[in-house]
Length: 123
Image 1 (cartoon, one colour):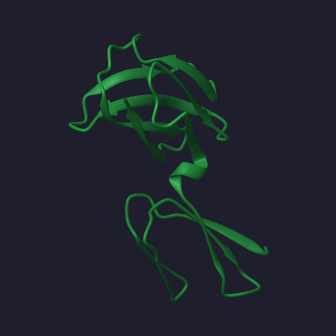
Image 2: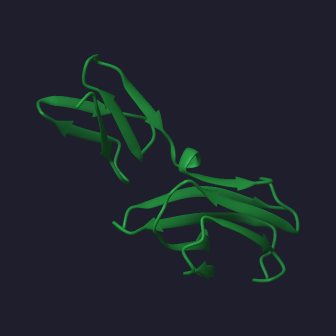
């Protein structure tokens, strides 16, 4: 094994095999076992939302396979939209789920119940 991926989740610190990883973002970390480097893969690398800021329509895209759900929540955590089809690309019209201008969060949940979140701004 030359590389190891560790899911940190919502935290920013992980201790593994006597080594401590501290990062300014949470998510997935890849460690090169032949070196001491750590590569960050932020949530926005896993979940892409474009255009962002959005006006009427936008696309949600992920490279993940075996997706349980994709949801959009407002800043209070209220689910504004949810898709359980497992498709990795969604084209959404903001009028479909009656969103107003503001900040929202796009959450992708994989088959292991790991969540990946990206911020969405609607103008």
